[in-house]
Amino acid sequence: QVQLVESGGGLVQAGGSLRLSCAVSGFTFSAYTMKWVRQAPGKGLEWVSSVGPGGGVTSYADSVKGRFTISRDNTRNTVYLQMNSLKSEDTAIYYCEGRGYKGQGTQVTVSS
Image (cartoon, rainbow, N blue to C red; front, side, top):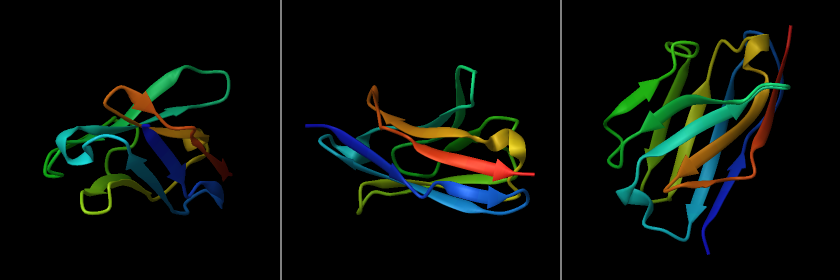
């Protein structure tokens, strides 16, 4: 059974930081690109960042470039998203995705 379980969301003031985690089970984690996507209130899903299977190749949406860092630990089957200099427009539910599966999400709320 495939499971992706996000954690680490919460309420933070603008300019603050959060670190999201996504623990994966049920498929060969180290073989797949992993992504973070988000959905703001009243909006569609937005791709945020991706990391290749080995962790060495990363990419970011322009809206988060320079503020967010994606990483993964293939020994722990976990992908992370370090979010710094948070803005109110980063408020959303954040989901991790891999191999076509998506987790239940974790809420991030940034107060201005």
